[in-house]
Length: 171
Image (cartoon, rainbow, N blue to C red; front, side, top):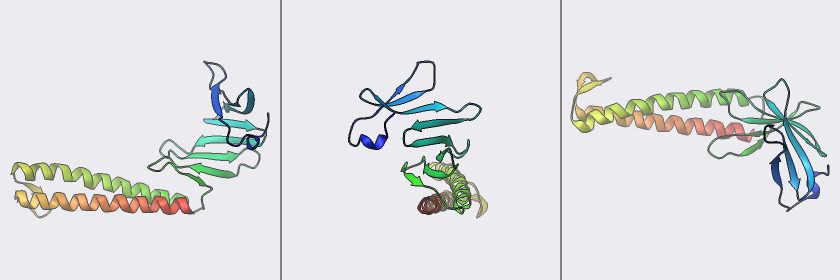
């Protein structure tokens, strides 16, 4: 295998070694530059090239970040964040897990508020009365107001969670 850095600007292509196997080779023409195969006993892939050996693994079921670690030192060298921007970011600081938790909580409550705004909006548009925090038999105008408050709260929480995610990417 030759180092990947010797092939700048050339078209590189991943090909499956055999149909029934989850092993791949990175080619530049006829030259094999790297191999990617599943690690036995773990839910990760191993990448082997002349430049080094790496493990590629999803952080967890709930966290879709893909972590790339160096096999010899187990050092986290890159994190691919799967989200809106799908950015490649390099190793995060120790505070990253707290920021991810705050982002998760923000997104959860944003979903709660945004979901709660829908029935109140429908009730307001149809002209019916319904229970709100302002009273048991609230008018359609009050339901519309409560729906707007829920929408605004949900939007602000989404913005808060996005800001937390961006901050953790900068670390």
